[in-house]
Image 1 (spheres, one colour):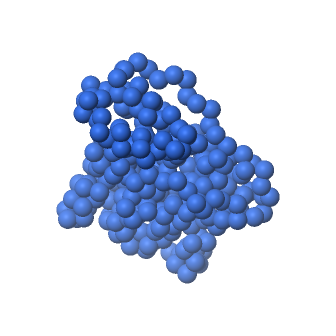
Image 2: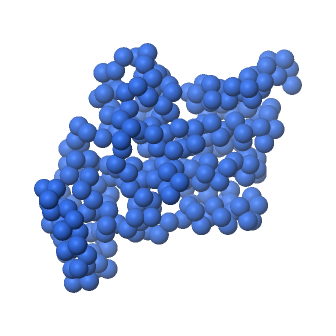
Length: 287
């Protein structure tokens, strides 16, 4: 290891959060090359400070066995978040190469029943840390435009959901201020284990076109779009007959009728027809 590599490793170990923000903005190959001289346990300790998306891309730069070794050194919270960035075959390949006990735990925690919010949420939406500037955030948006949606969810290095920012607010903000200064901290979120039938009646759909989904420890899972939920219910309409749900519908109506939303009618439509949904709604101005 030459002097430059030694200094780089020392900085990463002494200032992991600052280093993480720098590495997250690098191409994945460059980031992997930068870290390759470090021991797996040191790489894992550093990646604890990186967001799940960039971490998953960095691990792709290593042989599968090395990626699995690094993954096994992450906390279970971070490992779950990173694994959700991969497709099922890649998840299986990595989990097969780590400690069986940890692998079994991670399999149980990332595999949610297909009728839950966690299984329907998109884990690949762009997330941003709260401590970068608006200018840095816009740079990341430009690099990952395919993952950016109208709502930009802010998560910390422990993958906890911290806030949300509208894309139009980001575009109009002062470039030098941090995201923590402009993000909305009071965020409507859905538990990952919530049932689709309960989710569709959530009053927040009257305002929002996507909602963040969080695990029981407040870990950000992904974003659930309203159209995804409606399409799922329509595809499974034969399994959810209105007669079976009549009592639940009445209870939900009693709970939400004063809020002035027509979601109960939408639920009835979703359960009694299998026709494709109409044109997606225009996204709202509130996160």
